[in-house]
Image (cartoon, rainbow, N blue to C red; front, side, top):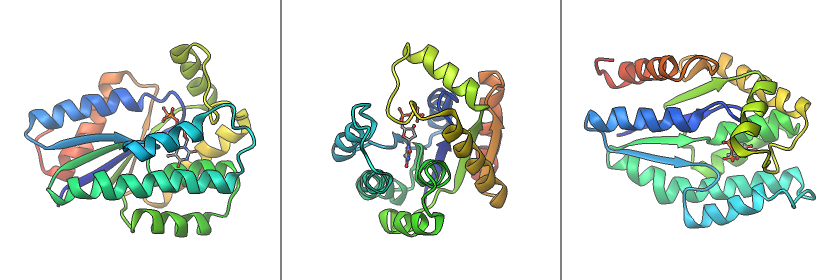
Length: 210
Ligand code: TYD
């Protein structure tokens, strides 16, 4: 069986760069690496993504949001992630189920137990082997995002600071509850040292020289 690695973190934490660098490193070592992201990663998921992130959809209820994220995830797991893992490949996914717990659970205040049940149904119980969480103070993440996107905010970026603070607290609580699965890194480190720390954890899992 392959290895399923997910990346979590607030807005602007640099997940995309780290995933790209890790993918290159693993491919150079002969692994069959698939990089994907949520919401999206499939034709159906990309359509759902547009609905979810459209800043015009201010009237979306949190419950509807949960099912849309979960629908995109259900499709991605079956169409892309599971088949790749079954072939012995490695999957690097930019956000996964823990984003739902962090944003819709801790952020929006929906019941965590219920979200866990919905997520279990959506994923068929597939959980990541390793979760890399790039942690960043909320103000800094939003400032980075603004610089990168020239002030173009998606519907979730545009939430209030207190929302993003609850999301971060949620991530830290989940990571503390399952330290063997989570790797928490300070995203303010230089790109290289972050990447080294990620490779070290993966090298341990894959029994590779770092
Ligand atoms: P995206 O532009 O992909 O942002 P990022 O670069 O931060 O990953 O937007 C995805 C947004 O959706 C992001 O704000 C997090 C949010 N999200 C949820 O609220 N719940 C979820 O289950 C997922 C997967 C993402």
